[in-house]
Amino acid sequence: MKAALQPLEGQVKSLEEEMKELRTAFEGECTVTMLCNKSVVAHMVDVSEQLEEIKKTLDDFKTEADPQRIPGDIPDDVATFHDAVQR
Image: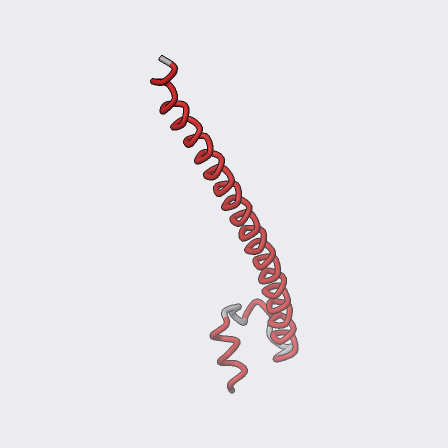
């Protein structure tokens, strides 16, 4: 009976080792994904800060371009800003 169980014990041991390898690989992938996500979030924060600076610059431009106009009269889109600069 013990002889019949030996191949099964070998297979169980092999499967346990494979599970450990897969768990390690999975945890490694999770770590890499987490680091990538943190990098993306940090980049998004940086882009958001840059966008706020651009909006402030645009607001300053609106105010300085024609003090007679109310800043809300000039649209906030980039194309309009670009066209105004090209004139």
